[in-house]
Image (cartoon, rainbow, N blue to C red; front, top):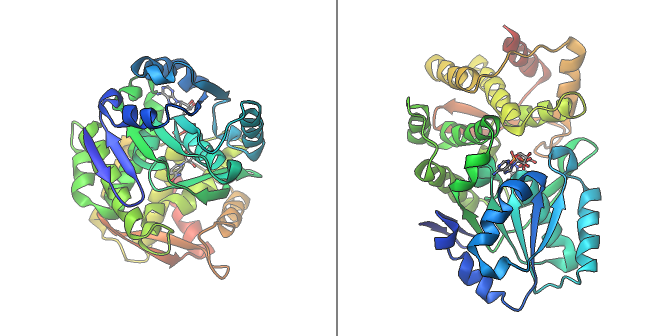
Length: 351
Ligand SMILES: NC(=O)c1ccc[n+]([C@@H]2O[C@H](COP(=O)([O-])OP(=O)(O)OC[C@H]3O[C@@H](n4cnc5c(N)ncnc54)[C@H](O)[C@@H]3O)[C@@H](O)[C@H]2O)c1
């Protein structure tokens, strides 16, 4: 069992029945336990979890439809209404069993209901294990824009059991791997090299390494005033792409971020901030290893994407501010991006 404890969070990595979850459930023995799942985690993860803990045998299970398109305030309202029907109080415990959508929404639902209900995350996707369940960001999308509503709220604990990954599709594993590569590119060259090694390992050690990188940044800068912004590498462009495709043919968060990192590396290279070698390596690892197809955009679509970026939460004084890689393992935040920087960088995706 690996334990990462900080002032804001407790993260345990290993078989969940060996974790402190059992003790936590004992602390809540007189409380109601509610497990939030989507259709897929209901099918693949719920029975396994309940089988490990007698205390969950009478838990209330709330199932919401899977997918980013359901990460909305309307679904939250339905869950809050169900909480009222079940007479859930502030002493009860919400267990978020699922990927980043369940974690983000469940954390938001818990922190708003009656001004705050304790919750834990049991992430079941690689992306949720290494990224979404770490760092206290919760929220929902609005009008096809990502995470427009939300609060910072920390779970009582995060229990990471990689056995949940056995039912996850290759596509979803790749989504998480992109975030792990992002941690390496922005902050830790050795982690990047390990992930790029021929065996390309995704196991408890590399998962724990990614969590440690994210957690230490969050600890230093919990409210994202400085260093935490580095974790947004690939996300300024990535979120615009994800929003752009949301009502066309949706692309996954990981795919969008992988393209985002490539475009942002193109910008850094064009500005002579990133060496040729590191630029080529980043491009190669993301485009080839992640099997990203080339994308084409019309001039109007590029202008539209830029418009979406102008609405990015991370902007200041009407300037689009972006993380740029300076080398593998090093990046800088708050770099201003102009339309012409973006246009040439995104057009090179089609070559
Ligand atoms: N809060 C943060 O800091 C943060 C960071 C990164 C991403 N996010 C958010 O996370 C979300 C993406 O997370 P995600 O990629 O986990 O998406 P997701 O929650 O939609 O999960 C992806 C798919 O996998 C299914 N699934 C989950 N676990 C499974 C399992 N064990 N076996 C089989 N299927 C399973 C889900 O039902 C879903 O269909 C986005 O909304 C993104 O904004 C949040």
